[in-house]
Image 1 (tube, rainbow, N blue to C red):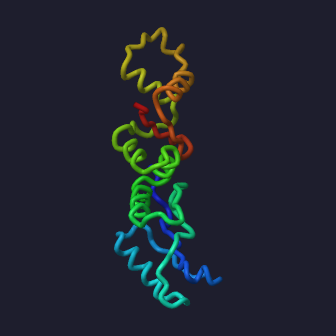
Image 2: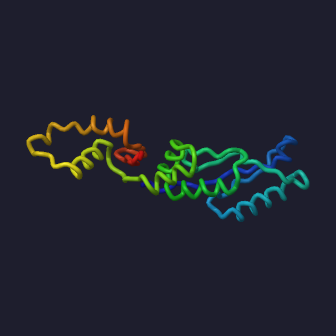
Image 3: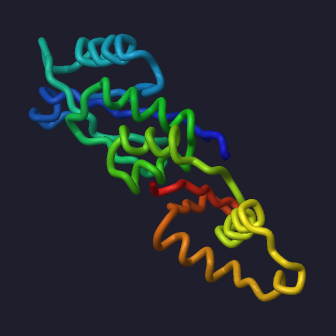
Amino acid sequence: MSEQKGEIRIYVACLAAYNNGQLHGRWIDACQEEAAIRDDIKAMLKASPIPNAEEFAIHGYEGFEGASVEEYSSIHNVVALAQFISDNGALGGKLLGYYGNLDDAENAFNDHYYGELKSVAEFAQELTEQTTEIPSSLEFYIDYDRMARDLEINDILSIETGFEEVHIFWQH
C-alpha cells in the first residue's frame, strides 16, 4: 500500500473578514487532535482584521486523496477523514469515493479486505487454485480474465491504485 505523500490540511477562513471583502485564513494540519485544530482556528480568528470574529468555514483542503471535505464539515469529521487517509493513503481516498461515507469505508477495510495483487485475474487464479483441484490437462484452458470480470460483477470490489497494484474487497 502506498504511503501518504504531503500534508493533509484544511484552509480555514474567517467569515467576518470574507463577508467584508477581505481574505483572512490559515492552512491547518488536519492530522492533529481536534483540540489543537480548534486552537489554531481560534488563533486565526483572533488575528482577523475584523474585531471579535467568531465564525469560520473550510474554504480549501489538500491531501485528502479525492475524499470530499465540505465547507461546514465538523472538526470531528475532518480529523476522522484525515486519520483514515493518513493510515490508508490513496486507497483510503478511493474507498471513501466509492462508499461515500467513512463508516462504510472503514468497514470494508476492517472486514472485507482481501489484499493487494497485480490484477483481478491474478486474484481469480489464486482463488481458483486455493479452492479447486485443477487437472493438469485443463489448467491451460481456464480463462482467468473472464473469471475476474464475473467476480467483479458479482462478488468483489477492485480498486486500482497504481500499475499492477489492485486491491480486492469482498462485497459480501
